[in-house]
Image (cartoon, rainbow, N blue to C red; front, side):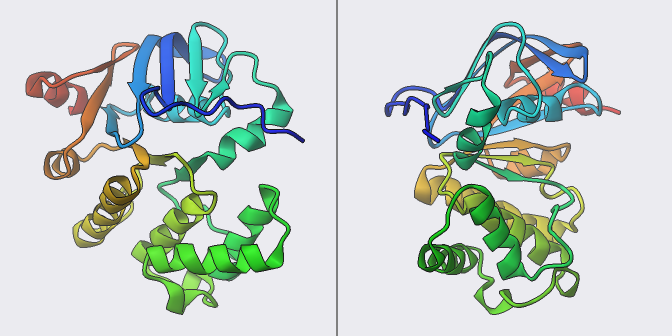
Amino acid sequence: MEDKSVQPTKNEPLVSFKGADILNGENVVIYGLDMEIKAGDFVYIVGKVGTGKTSIIRTMIAENPLLKGFGEVCGFKLNGLKERDIPFLRRKVGVVFQDFQLLMDRTVEENLEFVLKATGWKDKNFVDKRIREVLEDVGLTHKAHKMPHQLSGGEQQRVAIARSLLNRPALIVADEPTGNLDNETADGIMRLLTGINKEDGTAIVMVTHNRGIFEKYHGRVFVCKDESCEENLNDEVIDLALTI
């Protein structure tokens, strides 16, 4: 199997949508999305429930097809992307979910090993070394042999972030990564994500309902509203979009 992506140059976007219709199932939830994200960007996607925020992320990782408009992520054109190329795309994009999505019958170490093997890594020395590195990055080297149920919610989310780092992605997409956490723990997760963004230049795209987060940790803000998603700096528009 051959990686057929075209590596973006320094000034080219990691994510590019032009006139893209975003689907949820068979229904269009966002029409004509225009979005560019470059290395080092920290981008929030905000809006009410059901406005298409998560659908944008799913389109980025080829869980949802792109049938109309243009889309490219980390050098992969999403229009007509072949199924055999999807694993290569997902090597370059780390994903963090609100509900962690850890394998509950495996240790932390085994969870990470599973992902590396599933994305094609077979060298045991490399696998072991990379697991140690990402656990060190998130401050959990001492938890490698713990089961997920033995960890706090914040620790489980740190494992999920470690998992997203395994393939040294150019881009991390995070769907409400602090949604199930108390404020103090959520703050720790945000410090970790912003540190990864600043130190490594990894682009972050984060869905959130929490205005306090994107006011404290600044980034670009895209607002999903009325079947559209646009970058917006207007506080009144953001307030309206977050009102439930």
